[in-house]
Image 1 (tube, one colour):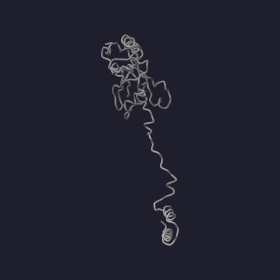
Image 2: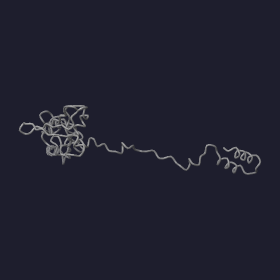
Image 3: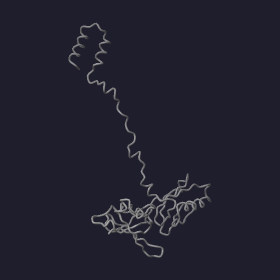
Image 4: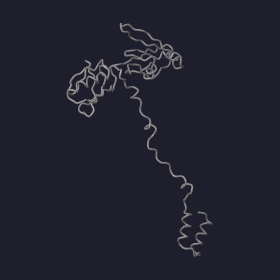
Length: 227
């Protein structure tokens, strides 16, 4: 509080006939620590959700097989029957290509698409339920894989989704090691006759926008070689 202002307030309190209410108002308007700037700038409301919460997680959606995916052995399936929790479960496809479900027993899953499997499960459940609503989702693709060998950080075998390209595969393998011949990468692919073809891939050209057709989608058992 300004010394001169404090002196005047004390003087008013001692000598003036001003009512006590007025004196109180004078003192209240000059209370120490009060800032007019603070009252004109209210604090901002708290943020309810962070950017990560507002942004949907797309990783699983990008890796989920589409309806044209052909189920294979060791794939993990989620079978949902609406309003029938005892019939809803996650089941792995056995080595014989079959799964076991309540009420209907064993059913062939390998070699079928999720839509085809859904239709057969629905047909079989119709003998026990009225208009069963069935959903089949491939939760994990374990049957289809590709290989990547050579001068990459993590060579090995990886699960193959319906949209995996050569660039995707290199990224999954951790990228190139030093002295990798990035212009001489190639893909080994088996044909229907049991033979093997060799497909060239020039990484330098592809990332520069040249020859994008070389960034092919991989098929099961493709092997990428990085010299």
